[in-house]
Length: 80
Image 1 (spheres, rainbow, N blue to C red):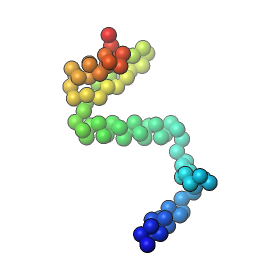
Image 2: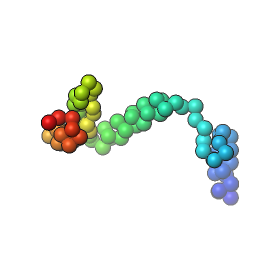
Image 3: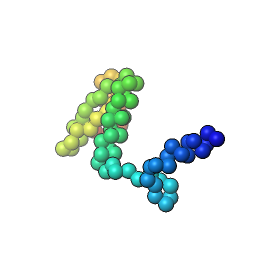
């Protein structure tokens, strides 16, 4: 019975023939939403964001402190 109720809850949402849900969200909107969610999760876990210049853009590294951030950035190739 619970299964029928759960299936009925999704009955009004448009689906493709493969059963996947159709979303009006574009790829850029999705990436932005996921980036915000990652930042919230990292802050909730007590991590700080450190930025390093990599070429012409800045890259973010999440770490507990500056020393750990430097280690991660070096491993990722952002600093020498």
